[in-house]
Length: 110
Image (cartoon, rainbow, N blue to C red; front, top):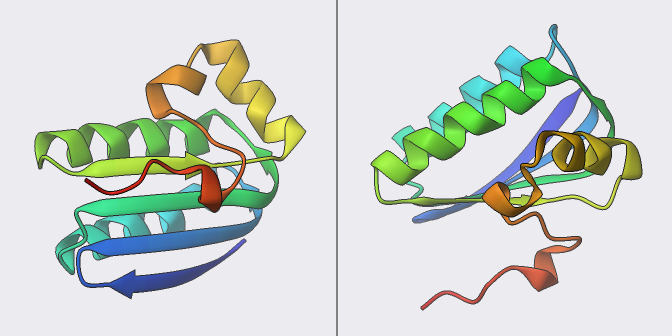
């Protein structure tokens, strides 16, 4: 798994590539925490290039969403990968995360 990040002031986009599983998920958690520590109040996790994600990866995202909400921030998930979308559907988290299929579909900043 690799993560490319773009942090611009209070916004961060983390583009994840590969597989998010029990071995790689801690790296994702660290990158999210790092973005928050650098002042990001809006974080976009782009999973478009993720071919597989297990429950560990999903748990990392749930924890990040909780932290962001507690800090009055926002976490958005972008994903058009069917195997990964299936995890969000099965767990009922599609609406909780507001998963969109492309960055262009994200809600506009107020």
